[in-house]
Image 1 (cartoon, rainbow, N blue to C red):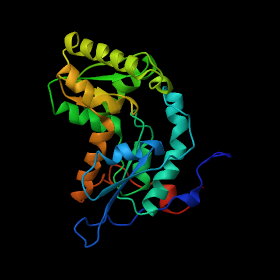
Image 2: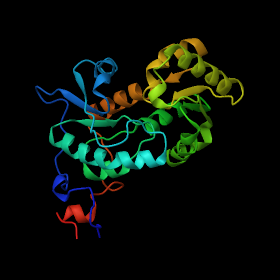
Image 3: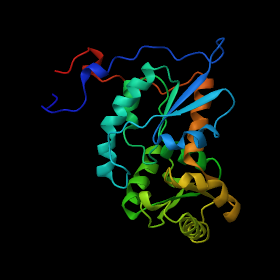
Image 4: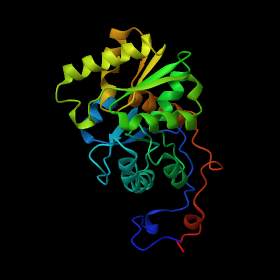
Length: 259
């Protein structure tokens, strides 16, 4: 039963039956929706291949930044409404912007197109690039949730550590040079003390410093937004999406009513 005051409107959702579009169709142009700040759109466009368009679509229903499980849960209802609308608009894949991957499983139940979380996707890539990887994130609060995400993703045996730089998300760009120096300092500790072979930048705002960090540290440093957009591109081009056996339409939505 849905309690009075539930925020999800049943009219927004449907039993998704629309087929994945064929990339080989004449006139086909791939569209990937990024659920996050519009200001990142140009930078994200540079991460994908020719003929692929990235459109940033902030849903505007949630906290200004996500640094706790409480804030993750606050962000989920807006994401769920957004993914349904984005599929209806004809997007081929969706990449939510938060590294903690809040709401990904629920979103996959509501649509047929790929919905890819930057956290799990980056960890899977990192696990293929070395024996051990570390995540460098913003604050202590998110360390344990990210360790749990590694468990859920199946890569915990390869996780060397999750370390934090001690700077809140909304302050990362206040002094970019100081933030980058702190990122390098913590990155070196993961390599030298934790024996990490690969680093993952565990925050969307941090992700844009990945290439510089890789040059300075001498190990692969993963930009989670870049690899997730590219992975989405790969899935769409391959005609693949998540299994509806693992992410079935919720029964109440399948029959078109919430009782």
